[in-house]
Image 1 (cartoon, rainbow, N blue to C red):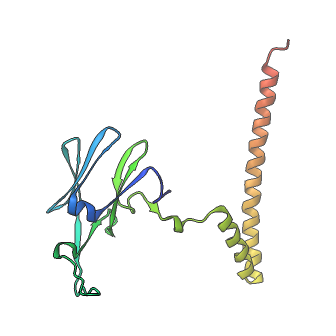
Image 2: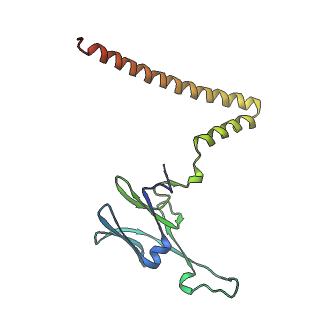
Image 3: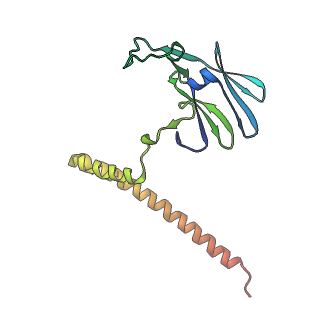
Length: 177
């Protein structure tokens, strides 16, 4: 699972693509994203691909700004693209890992950092979960939790046993000097 703050990801706002376009050199290839009437088109090294992302334009109506401010007519639009799941997204992401991929947050799938918990947060949550449960449900949940811990313990012990067996085999197969 990738997070949106991963260093291998390049975030491209749809607004930037629609107003100015996008061009960058990634892994020795020139990547361009252009806003066309039928959507955003992908071009790599001068050859246009059949890949298109449909663009949804939402105009901002009744825009009242303080101190007699105004919003230019060409900037009063919010742009979205439709992902494979049919939802609207404000950004495209380029994954610059071992293989080159481009898509929306729902295509990868990406998670925001606030949607993932650290080990410490999970431990605190588990302790609070035990407190919130009623005694009967707590016993059932504790039994499941204990069963999972026992399974992990057995797997760890099996791995240690295999490593010891490999070491013993390696020691016995070495010639004695």
